[in-house]
Image (cartoon, helix red, strand yellow):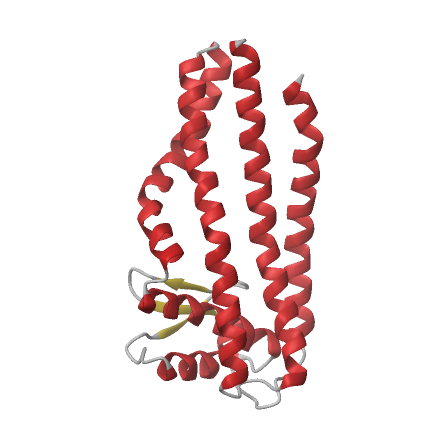
Length: 226
């Protein structure tokens, strides 16, 4: 009964997740057509932001694909997708500076980023094992396996929740530094905010889907145990 009730919220959250993905893609494409006033490419903005924060030794590399941008904390490198690396649009500098925000977090040992890094090996294992434990538990009615699967799945959900403040903080840092150091004008901040906010929404939606799915598993488990 409880699990059936949860299906509708999960479907709604999944719909939100799909909408968020379409929105970030659409917003990026829209502002990718708008050059920034100072003509900075994503690579140039990222390099200036890194250097101004003492991160001279952090390289910037172009990678193939769209929205494949990320900061690698192990190799300490900022990787920008080719549209971001080479273009001088509002989207390009927004995404590039967001990734540099993660590099600055790393340098300053931002607590939530440190926590996420420490959780990653455990979560990587847990998220891979959890689906098999849950599937086996439901197929064979093995409640111990279901309970263990829920514990492992909880670790993956917690990781997504920890990711939220990390992403929001990186965007906040990016916007502040971009204005302070003159990468964008006051009028361009609106476009930057739209690009970064739409990207953040994908993380919120993904976390919501996972959280509701976890709640569904817990309700199924407790209902059947009773």
